[in-house]
Length: 139
Image (tube, rainbow, N blue to C red):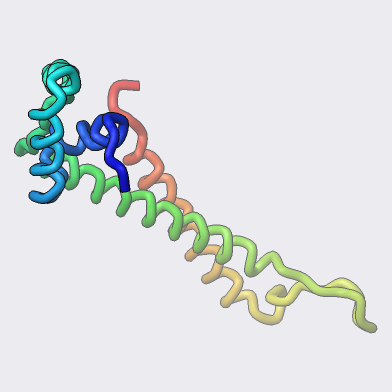
């Protein structure tokens, strides 16, 4: 395989970032010694390379804030699903058979329907609280 200046140019960003193996580094350095024009171009390119980003203590705070936000979103989603289910459950009805339209829970299972509505109300309150916690402050 023939190595050209274009191949070395393609390797230069990785070379400057220190992401190449020792053999590739030696190849690029040997090529640059033999081709001074390309070596000058590589030197100019290394001058404008991107700075290395260092991690700070703020990253841990950001990760914790992200974890809390994800937990709030999950809680809000679960609360919404449970609220819809327990609110709609006592309102379910059937029909199409000989008896016609009829409620599944009313009036025979009024206590179960009332408990379901109460659980639905609690879930709606939990949803509202979690939704409010997710709103940005100061808006």
